[in-house]
Length: 76
Image (cartoon, rainbow, N blue to C red; front, side):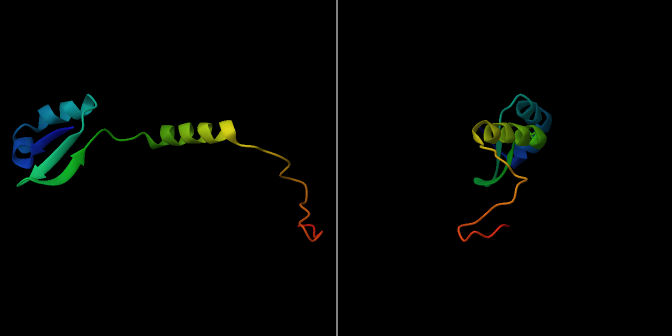
């Protein structure tokens, strides 16, 4: 992660944005205090598909259509 003052970032914005495009994360500071982070956006659709694939790999499925009889013998 590259730490840079906001004034430096403003002066050389295109350079730092190229770093972000290359996968680098930028931590912006103002008077030594961290104020923001810049990074590439997450492809939420792809991340969701990957998470579902991980869940599906360990999921157990059964009959979800037939009625269920609980411990009291009641059909629901």
